[in-house]
Structures are given as structure tokens and as C-alpha cells.
Image (cartoon, rainbow over all chains, first blue to last red; front, side):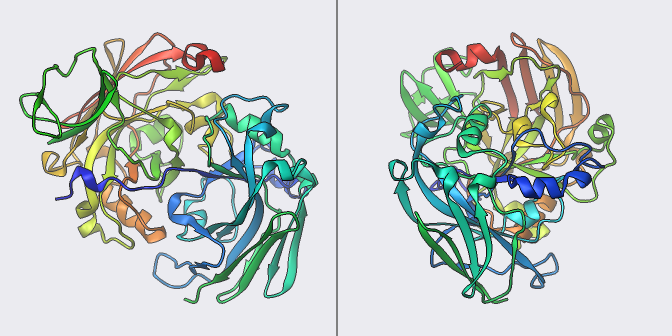
Length: 226
Length: 260
């Protein structure tokens, strides 16, 4: 029998990601999102968690996923996002004051199965072990007065595959912090990945991926072998 | 055996509760308070909560109630610790909504790390069971990662407790009567035997996707019988062999006070 004390020693933080925050992606999917099962385009930020088993950092290997038969999956994909690290408790804050609740900025990688559907929570695709590296360091918020002016690139084996100017986000960093803080109280150290380029980048076993931003640095990870 | 976390006179205590309903402190001494004493503030019984998985549409009758076909695969979503609160602690009803309901759920708490756990071994990974009330605000549903976080990830809307019950006290988690009352009137009356995907199945399923860790929880869904609840209501969720979890509902303004 297990005892109560075994339910201890766990990290308590949060990695919250915003999906569908690329305005060009939303425009491209507009017709699909006006049909079943979606019926109408999203009116609120589309959010998902990367739970603690996914957390990792720069230099670590991202495990190659296996399907339910234990076979290596054929495809995985990656997106890169600015990571907004909350600096103090944020409860029901306005858009105007939202950036004052940011402690620092970093980068977040979201490795997953290819995004095919947004109707149900994508536990199978998004909750893979080691699939959410964060890093390489924290840049104080004061050093980045306008986070929406940053550009995030994804480079695979030395070739740029995606470049996402955050000015293209459907909702700005401040808008997201405010909106989210009316759903849940955000605590110091919790991280919001505010937006990914709509076109996720396909990756293969053994690839080296660098998610970069001039003002932050490069988050570098290798995909594992099967 | 029942394990609980309580606050008494500002001290956080990890206690056990024996069959005579006496509260025993970690040093073995008896706390001179009854279970219903007002001096006790009940905390969520899992001290270091991990990933909280919750099931949608996991009872055939509730799935029908919501006009859905029963799922062929579990509908799993994740909640975070901001949702947790304890027995007799307030949960809030957001302003300007039409329909908010409770969901009385058996919650299995994971006690050891595992991946690719076989169904027949699954219960070895359960540290105990508790009871969760996985509130939902139907007005906020959107068809993106449904049920979306605005519906299911709000502060205080997952009361948990009152205590964690060890597995040997729950020999058959698949046959427990489950009821909810609102202001003393029973509005939900079901049994965990009607669960579509049971605890061993869910542990096998989730651990094929990811590593499960101590403190992770699986809230297993709710049966037929959900009704709208309002500020001022008292909701009591009960599960046989586990206990009764009481939640007073308050308004958004009364909950957030100076942050409102």
C-alpha cells in the first residue's frame, strides 16, 4: 500500500499555452471554423496546458513519441513562442496594467503530434513527456518594453523554417494576460506561451531545433531516436 | 484510513481520522475537536497536487443528458491548482450567467510514478480516493478544446475533499453510490458502476500518453442530474465509502472582495 506521504515533492507551477493566436492562421481557417463542429470562430483565447511531465529546458532531448501500439509515431511538429513569466500575483488585471505583472521573458517550445483538430482538448498530442522545453534564460521584463515587437524563429538543422512576428498575434501579450487573469489568478513564476506561428514545423527523429529571438537567445533541443 | 489537511488556529496540520471520527495529529495525539467543529478550516487533502485530469461525458446517462453520443475514447481535459479549494470553502458563481452546475466525481490520486501501466496493475498506482466537485459554467462553452478553460479552469471551482481515503477502504471503486444535494434536496443520484471508462482503464490510457506522477489526480466524471446553482446555495456531494463534500456558493464579488 502507498501512503499519504508519497503524494509530495511535486512542482507547483503552470505552463499555459495560447493556440490559434496567429491572425493569418485564423483567417486561413475561417471557413472551416464556420462549420461543424466549430460552428463559429473562437471569441475567446484558445488555451491549453502543458502539464509538468512535459517540462524541460534547453539542451535536453525531446523524446520521440510512441503511439498506443508502442510504435514510434510517424510525425511530430514544433512551435516556438515567447514565454511570459508572471512576476507577481495577477488577479483580474486590466489590459493597461497587465505588462506590469510580467517578471521576465523567455522562450517556450511546444513539441507535439501534428495539430489536426481543435475541437477537443489535445491530450494525446500535447501532453508528451519532455515536450515543453523552456529557456535558455530569463530576460527581465524591463529590458523588453514592447514584447509584441519581437520575432520568434524556428530553425531545424541550421535552416530557418518559420519566422513569426508577434505583431501578427490576434491578441497582444497585455490583452492575453488581462483576459486570462479574469479566468484564473496567475502566480509568480507561472508561464504563458502567448502564441505560435500557425504553421507548425515538421520535425524528424534526431533533428536539432533552435527556437530563437534576438532579444532572448536560442532554446536548443534535439529530437530523440525511437 | 482517512487523511486530511486542516488549519486550526493558524496551524496547518496533517491528520488522520479514525473509525470513531476522532482526529489524530501527526504526533499521535488526539485533536480535541469534532469533525464538524467550526474551528477547523479544511484544505484540499492532496498537499502537493500534480496534474489534474478530469473526464467529460464519462457516464452514459449524463452524456445523453447533454445530447451527446457516448464517447468511444475518453474525453480528458486538464485543470490547474488555482481551481482547488477545500470542504466547506466557498466557490463562486460568475456574474451574468444563466447556467452553472456542480459535478460530483470520484477522484483517484496517483501515488507512484509510472508509464505504460497495464490495466491489471493500475490500482497499485493509486494512493487513495477523494471526492471532487468539478463545477462547469455552461454559458462559457466554445467549440475549441471543449470543455475550454474558461468553463473548467476557474479559481475555486474544484472543491476537493474532505479527505483522502486509502485504497483498502474502497475495495470496489466501481460500485459506489454517488449523490448531490442542493439546499438539502437530492438532485443527483447515481453510481460509479455506470462509469464508461473506469479508473484502471484511465490509468492505463493516460500512462500510454505520458508519465503519471505522485499527486496527479483523475476526476472521473459525473452521472445524470446536474442543475443550476446560485450564490447562497449549499451543495453537498457525497460518495459512498468516501465522504461528503460541502460547498457554499457565493457571488463573484463576495469571492474576490477587494480584487473584484
